Image (cartoon, rainbow, N blue to C red; front, side, top):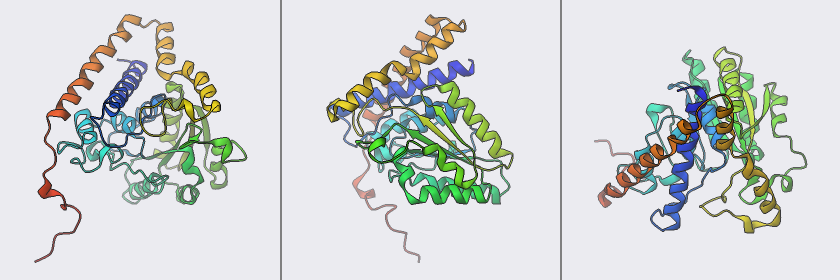
Length: 321
């Protein structure tokens, strides 16, 4: 399977999983709040394809795609979202607290911008240990308005840490548009005061994201320090839940109509077909993926719920004798 086909399969998987989660939320079967990244799949797929197993990824509240793209187990994620004991966080975390240590994902954090200093800490640890590992922070455009975002960029640049800052700029912080929060559309320029390179990418072009990530990761491994990638995209669904949120305002309804034709999956499909890949071969991916998703849903439904006797486990440190 070529890089392009592999990227397509990952985006199809992320989309199928999240669309199914949306259906289950609407049906009342899933209770935990779920933040979907439908329309933004190219960023998780493109960046994680440039990473190795030992590289770390630090995601936020909208991280189903990061978890899957970094190699997280689909059954364990679905079970977690169902709140089951077989979940990756043992049913304690739900959608926003996913973890896959063996794949380099040490826990997603729903606090806005909290992934950024965590990734810097991981990058510092790699440098002190003389390890060639890269740390990646995924965060939204709203996180760039937090103070520790700028502090983290400065520290990472000062010590030339192997960190990749990835801003998934979907132009909204909850329901507030970027233009309502900032005088200028200049997130990528946050790299300049720290002296690191900043690159603005079409976040719906997965191959452009992949190429930009490879460039930044190569630079980090060579000891040249961090990079900032601003990947411009758009979430099709609401801030939380499966609703399309077109009632939020006329402005968003108009924007959504403009962004739907920029679907990252369809764009890559067209490009692969233009390069000579059989359309039938690409279309054959979808039913296989749907079966995988349904198998994960079945696994989650049949899994046991956490035992009430474990409610306070991991809350308090065990008393030393």
